[in-house]
Image (cartoon, rainbow, N blue to C red; front, side, top):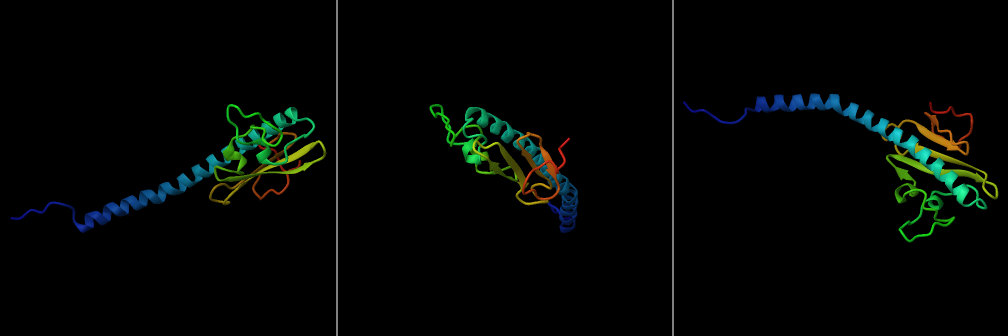
Length: 160
């Protein structure tokens, strides 16, 4: 009698079906975990930008708050002297305005010297990279909203 080595087609189909069922259960959990991680990173980035704004305002009191992310960043090496247009307070990745599935912008910088600002972080792809938007202004309180934020003021509830 002849014996064959290997798997039958039915056995292979059953194994593939089991793998697909496991993936159907695991992938949505993975996506939710990534969204939660991106949102946590976005809130931390807003805090970082608030700290950078306070440092910038202290270092350059005649300028006030920075009006752009590039003013807070810059090409910073060991011999670079920070200036008001390149303060070296945030890294080069963040000064581009995008990090961990979120887009960041500094808006509503007003006055001479600038006495106020808004920092807004919104998901690049809502529902995929994040669900919530984050913002803060010169009171340095991080606020969160389920809708897209265009300006940050006291009407948006604080993140607890």
